[in-house]
Length: 301
Ligand SMILES: Nc1ncnc2c1ncn2[C@@H]1O[C@H](COP(=O)(O)OP(=O)(O)OP(=O)(O)O)[C@@H](O)[C@H]1O
Ligand SMILES: [Mg+2]
Image 1 (tube, rainbow, N blue to C red):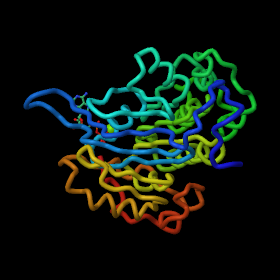
Image 2: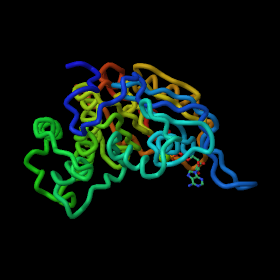
Image 3: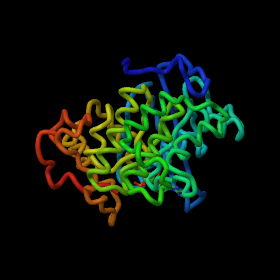
């Protein structure tokens, strides 16, 4: 299957632009508050995300990761600079058009799953397509459901599923409408290692098999090693950009940024692990060949 499949057969009926750039930020500045209380969350970010890529965003707590993701996804407005999704400049859109763009062209995965508790897992997965008034592509849905390994659990409500299962449902929900971009903010942050690996595998398949573009914020070098590229933020700026990451390579870069992390920000205790043979891109790296060094856990927050 082609690595990047962005045309034809779209469940959404939307024909993506031909631009190879899925999202772009230029001179992005985000300030909160004013006067002495002003916080600069983004201090001038330039970033291009190519279609069919899997990018991890890392950095110390408060470095601007979530703010960057929210500005890229049109969930927040930058103070200065501009953002485009494909060929669409977000600054040209009013609120309704932005809502429509998010609904039709973007998918989201949140740390806290954010499934609707009164709907079944299957209803949760198909909801975005239905809200958009579009027909669910059954064959595509079946492939995604099969990939979640939850075919026999789909009639259950989220409350009857484990956290890891709920997050796989959330990833399936994000993928089913064939969005141009999937944004995931710490999707494994609440999961133990095995559950995290299955979520990362599913995101990876979203890129490799279904041609999606994925952007993921994470604190865990082993999760980041599933990506094709890691962008490092510190103090609201991009300070490093690593291609074909390995867990150890990411860990080394993170150590170099340690001084930027504020006090009292311990990491998530290495809750996402990469198990040898688990199938992620991390298999290429040291993490796939043997135990990850102890120090590679819990550095970020
Ligand atoms: N609504 C807001 N009002 C004021 N300041 C904010 C707001 N949102 C974020 N900030 C500040 O902007 C900076 C960047 O925050 P952001 O949430 O993007 O960081 P982050 O890298 O995602 O951190 P974490 O790893 O802890 O999630 C921080 O200093 C934060 O306190
Ligand atoms: Mg954050």
